Image 1 (tube, rainbow, N blue to C red):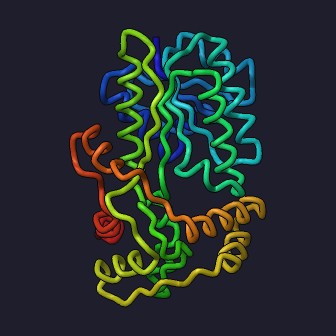
Image 2 (cartoon, rainbow, N blue to C red):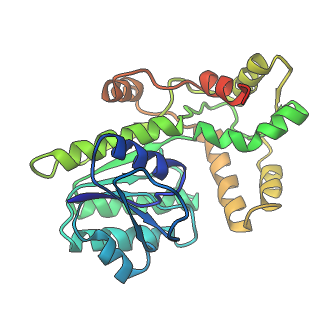
Image 3 (tube, one colour):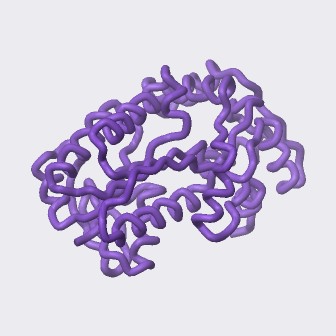
Length: 289
């Protein structure tokens, strides 16, 4: 019996596959296109789409544990609900689902509310699952590193409410730990929800200061204009996605992204090490290649 990893070629999914393979676990990696990515030895590539019922039934055969990750798309909810229903049909009782922090509070943000819908299905149907709720990914800021370098401005409008940014490698490590815990258990384990956060809640000014310190040049925070952020993002992304991200940034400014009071201690106990800091991420991003 194997562990099926969806989204296996993406940032988180590929790290999860690597971590499971390194632990010696039997892994199936679900991909849309065969041969797109080289996987570690022992990983079985399966081709399919989350809304292709026949392909998913085949992918879920001989699977004991499911890691469900689906990208932010217009049909995200359909993808997740189809996959979970097919997993139940296949008798799978061990699930780790990648949601998002405050999915129940950012009620007007499409991809947050979509993930909350999936969480409610898991809860209502009593699916034995770990729900992972990550905050803003530190690695998102790699996309704006050229702006920081060329203009001395941190342009993400995250405001001052505080965002406990989390390193994607920590997300993957927690996912691997939970997948192995569920997969290796004698029986299906009770459900659990984990806020995945970094060790500090940062403001826009804090983030700019981190880049200033590490680069040795002045970096300022670009401000809270979410309309300008949407216009810029819409110049290279679909308009629906740019608007979704605008709504998310507005929520970040109003609510912030902070885990439960015990979230950091709980994660560090689970991992057996400190969480990666934003300062360390910036140092690594600026290190000579």
